[in-house]
Length: 210
Image 1 (spheres, rainbow, N blue to C red):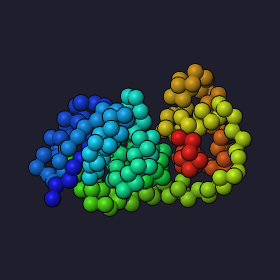
Image 2 (tube, rainbow, N blue to C red; image 1 turned 90 degrees about the vertical axis):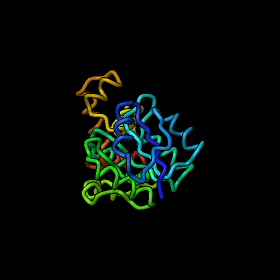
Image 3 (cartoon, one colour; image 1 turned 90 degrees about the horizontal axis):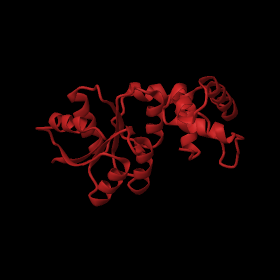
Image 4 (cartoon, rainbow, N blue to C red; image 1 turned 30 degrees about the vertical axis):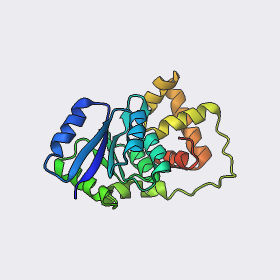
């Protein structure tokens, strides 16, 4: 039985290429979206069997969209699709309930296999992907009543870290120096009691900061 797929990507060449790769398979491209808003609307109109969603898109972050879709459709399998092999992306995707993570450089067999697995209701995560973020996901959860005294600027930096941005990208985004960002990152890690950016991203997700 064929499975309906929603593709969410803001690049036409990617969407066209995906449709070509999925020809003669049991995965049928039922709908396309080019933004977070379009994705939410497409799922509202006709819930697909599986979603393949880009992370970095114009007008909306795919990881935030994943979280929003999971609120209304907790059982909807969503596979993240990215050109970036970023452990922060992977950790956030796992924490938010994604069914898997596919690099845009993956071959056809990997892509089709992951979509078929996710559409059947199973996890499409590989052992290697999960192994890379095990430490981050095992980070002790701070109680909801514990307030961490982050400054407004530190909270802004943390949100950008959790989006997977580098220090250089954060500096440009916030209009501050690279050295200032490095200092904020060190303070953030110390205050929330984690050892790296990936753990900080998972902490931010659990505290609903992103």
